[in-house]
Length: 467
Ligand SMILES: [Zn+2]
Image (tube, rainbow, N blue to C red; front, side, top):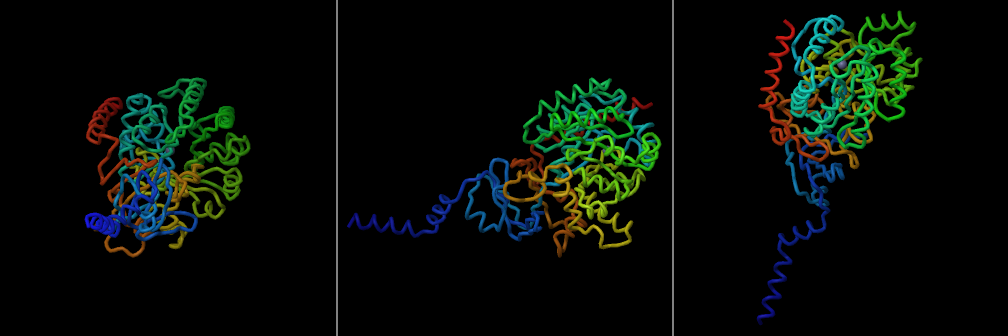
């Protein structure tokens, strides 16, 4: 009798839902993290949007994307981020900035590039930029970028090795270009010193999961032909990406044409500088022939609509570049010329700017604008096998965006909503390389109060230096 009752208990246990759930869990594969629920906007090749979707993450990579029911049946996670009622998108990619220039935010506005650079920026940099300054500015910019859902950025500045350390510490992904230029700058006073710095810097970060160390010749009008050729050889030998400014202003086109008898992209092609390692910011003033040269040489282009508008540099032929198959991304440029690192504003501006200049509201749709800031940016940085979309096998850079703010209510179309209505402040949770760096709007890797204090102190120093 006693034996019979214990057998009965076993049968009852086997039939309870709790046991069934436990058995399912045992069958499910363990993963580190599941982002569960919400509208998953994958930005994959078929532009899949999954309602009530989920993303499973293991070892810093995405292992599966699908319906929440399927994912939670197949996987069990140590950590679950509840994204129900929210959007889940690939991390945004800021394809061009100068992150420490956050400390020069608003230092001089309403000027053209030449006057702005030579009268204000270069002197302010000469008097203020130290490694300490660069670290403080990088922290400020990194905090701003995480808050806005940017998970990868492409930078060019001085003391880039220190920027790389700050970026890694913040848990952000970066293609970080050490700037080389034909005059003495804060970190290196001669060209050979700058190249030696670049050599050490690129070697140091080789194989890092977050940091891609790059070399960044400032522009074809500030770096000589011989030095540009040297940079190309350096990139071929080390595999480092080359980040640069190209064809930003009419003046640049005139000067390069006068000095080299060719337009900027033609000149760079002629001297063998262009390659699939090059990331060219701006590319505003291009002929059809130059667009073909960018495509033929596999050069990535980064569009900076707000910076180009503010400095009245011109409008990049983005629709033409896209039609020609050029990889085009989107960037904010430095905060001294924009004046923030907000990729939501850039998407919105890009979509509207090209409608205006082509006189056609069908140009650059909301979906295409979001693509520029995600998979397009990944292609422009030559990293699309790793980032830019939510797909199994890619690195787990995932952003959860609230959809219930007043400015987002009500909702009809997810792409329209993300590009035309959503603000950086609507970003809720940010995951980079599988690690949560902002949870429910709380930064986990950076101290916002300290960062702001330091920035205000440095502003006083900058102001004094310019008197
Ligand atoms: Zn720039």
